[in-house]
Length: 271
Image (cartoon, rainbow, N blue to C red; front, side, top):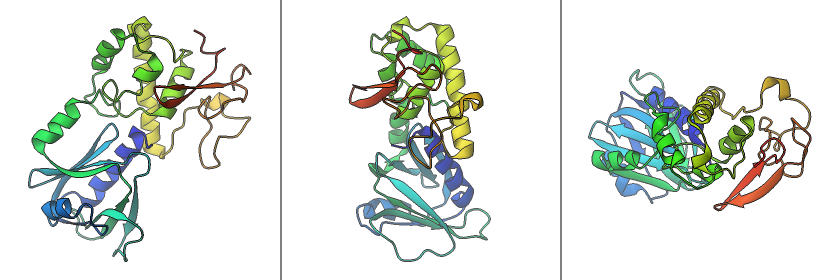
């Protein structure tokens, strides 16, 4: 599932390409036809991301909400769009404020693609924890939930009501970078530790926005065994079960925590 940096990259791109101009919105697949008709031809005011949620705000006061889920993807293109390929839930086409270059994007396979009124948008964002990539994010809001909880940190970091935008990769790698066991109860974390985690997470996710990929291994450790996939940067523990830790050589282990795969080094992250 795409993590928060992916949605912020999409929001930035869609704002640059479409905002300020009328956008033609359709649903070649048909499943979003009624929603598309509500915003078709309207001016896109802004695109933004909240955690793993993408929002396109139109001048009518309506917003299109997209959650990519496990299989959703946008395919971007420049110039006139050809015939749709595959099951395109939503197609957008417009030239934005400049009106010089036509751009398009096709959305396939999202978990959610719906039109919301502003009160519904407010209700959606109110359910989310602070997003490390938003300028006004308040880490103390997440801390208040964490410090009262007996749930393990590995679960709390993935809970979008606690922290918006963090997924499996950032969860595993952040805890490794700070030598914290994913099984440690939230209430045993100190404010100083949380402050360090938050600061590091903000920087890691900003790197993800800039570079389009999650770079989590420090330069001095970015060597040795290759990544878990040819097109992905190296990780410390994510998807490295059974392999030696890049730091200490101990075997990286795996478990399932609240339905999600969890990876950690028992030597570097004791407890």
